[in-house]
Image 1 (cartoon, one colour):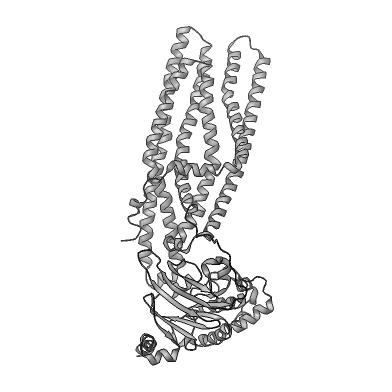
Image 2 (cartoon, rainbow, N blue to C red; image 1 turned 90 degrees about the vertical axis):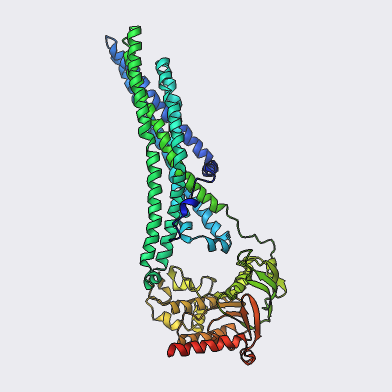
Length: 597
């Protein structure tokens, strides 16, 4: 069954709807002066709009009474025109201010998310998809910005109208006003019922949107692999499962929220009809013909009064979506940061002695994968780490770089514990070449100088020659200024050579090579080995390798199995022992023989 099939159980109601809304509106605090001006402008503009029918009623009374007083009618007409012009102007300014504020808040959230990414431990990204994170930064933040841009002004306008219109209605007839106000509790009760049932669907909708982005990012980033293993059908089925969930929750949430306006309109129309009957009765009972003009004005107010009440329903629907998005952004921003560096020790002169003392570690508390590991690498030594898959080779490197914190023991560089060093400083001591190459969209020059932008072109070319990649670069259009893109005509092996050159340019005193030659052919591997011998000379180097023929000249070979050191020595010594290493080494030749046969 696809992994997304049972997400309904996980994605229920919002964990804390009120807290999510508080988080959303707390973002307005830095802009409270601008928001206050916007509120004032909105209130004034709405009040002027509300007073329009009242002035129109006064004009109508002048028209009904004979003879006509054209000067008075003209005066009311001018006042009415000025009121509507100013109402439009205030509304325009209020919308302009809120559009500016909401765009700044969206920018602020994206900045915070970007900064948060750099402070999170790697363990967070082990458990969460990149696509979901991108969805939080794009879809969720966009929704928050749209809500603040539209819903907040509408909320202020609607609240002002709900308060102001009854006041104006009371000046016409208190009886009709009391009858009309029955609509408010009925509408509020209806809104609360719909919100209660629809809230969970808005939450699920945002989370499924994150799921679908995560799925798309995962499938299309590995599109070649999916096609190579005929996984298109499975990928499509998983997409259909998530997309169906997204469609269903979207349909249910929109259907429930769309019930608000027509139902409120029905209530308003009933009130509207009742006002007509009751107004006519009052006019006939009091024999007051002028009251007919008041009834017309009152009916106008009733029509206007339905708008903010119906708008409140729409605003609540938007706020539910915004609360779900706010909760997702809040969850991410409140994630536990990587432990801050409290120490800032630095080495006066880096010699390169690296020592593991009784190190134990597990990615999860219940499963330890490195057990009481101890080893010392002397300055300038080339240390090879070998072993079967899952032995803990790459984990050692992760611990050395403090990508993860050890559970027990300590790691020292030149007798100084790494936990007492700033992480940035510690990582600057190592140059890294990983199995998975990473090159960003930009020129080759920018990619090569990524760690040291101040590197001169002469130094860069020297490093690329050492990595045996200079000749290849000179054959490219634009040479070092060629822009690398996702579909650039650069093979995986050539990308690996470029990352090796980048490590050379960095010039760090120690090196980590994690399967650095795994993506190159045999001839290129020989060239890389020659370059690596020059690069690692005089530097403490840790080389993780599966092809054991590439590390025969290592000063020390650590043989690991199930998180423990089983053998240590040089290549010839370990072969002579005829132990675990010898079996690993000979098995590769057996495998090659079987393949040839």
